[in-house]
Length: 349
Image (cartoon, rainbow, N blue to C red; front, side):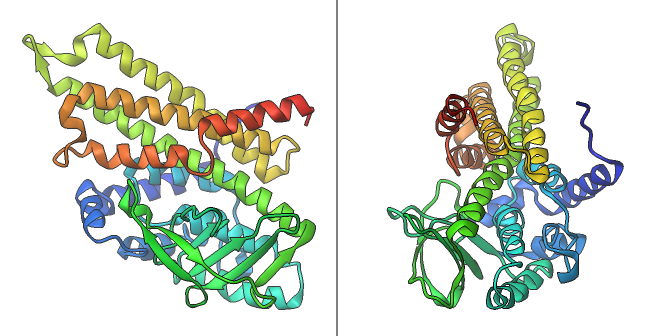
């Protein structure tokens, strides 16, 4: 099968790349470390471009596009380690809520205003199984909207405004991810779905999260490899750039190979989810495992090439290392997803 992005998708990606290159520099990242915020001027700019409302239905102010359209944009966001929660809001919350619009009238009435607010860039969201074993939720600290699920034999999906829950900030390796634990009480008014619709929604959001996170990891991986290659050209040892040494070339080439193998797998998983392919869950796990492996390898190589200076505050590399290490474990580690793929193959799914 031949796969390629359309001209429109490529142009959208290039436009977002240009904006982020100007508005999300390493100086901006350092400012975000000093004063993390859920929204910034960048959020408004991305909303104007249509990025934030990309997954929201057209009738509610969005573009109504799929994960295949969003993946290249997430890759660009990973390239700059964007601080804002586009992944949580656009890749997860919006499609989850849009998928539940056909439920009860009460559920639709509570969902529509939030989707319109997302499309307009007025809110940020966090999605996940909050309160489970004290596991913090990415983007919860400062989020306007929480879409939470319950576990057990009778899973449910609930929607809460920030005033309906207590969020306790949790320190993160990457402060811009704004982790938080959530204390809340499920109520009939907050419940959006239960039973089979809830099971389906929870599975779909987990698959989308794996692929969306993998897409960001692709961008991070490429950025770290580029930074390491540039540094290898500048750093001299024994009278010549260290990039001229075969050992350094092999390190960078190995990391690049992992990236090139992971990228089409991530794109293929996004296509599988958009088209409802029966193997979409396995494809999502394969994508997340490959992207996590590629990112951790690129982080290791970049740090080794830079030497001890690579993890100092003065060196920009640490801004991307921390995000890569955090996202490689988010929504399932490479080992977790490989185990899921193995279980799926054994079961014959």
